[in-house]
Length: 214
Image (cartoon, rainbow, N blue to C red; front, side, top):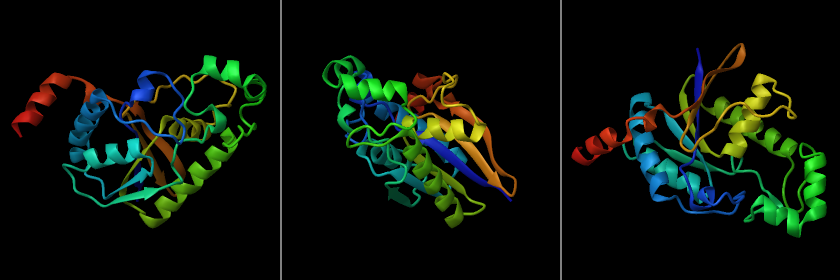
């Protein structure tokens, strides 16, 4: 028997459009992010998961609630799949970080995998808590379909770990807003069924018309 885990990145936010580091601060969904989430909800209706877990950050919770319009499942908020805490970097873009935190930026660039950003987390810390959380969720929902609404900075380290992609290797996959990454877990461990799927965003206008009529 298989446990299916659908990792979903939240809808687009205002800070996404401004290329600001959100971390564990929050920014509301844009109109586009709400539209993406509505389209995703139609996809989830076909998947018909047993339960929804979500990061407890508002952008993820809002996305989860929109998803749940058409499937009406229990939603459980957990901190274990929150976005990485970027500490003093949160709320800024990279040019501003380089200007106002030059030493911290240098340390981060030199060893970003192990470096703990002041008041924040390291990449390794994020990866461990993410994996621990996913394993706990699976233990509680064996052989079920589980949606986990989370963040790009959570999904990417998890995928790198499962695919044994070295941290230093440039990322060659995309985790777009409201993309779905499906994991399958069984006696052989994890496998990835698909990665960063945004098929629900294709033909957007046609689906939106159908939503208005329903």
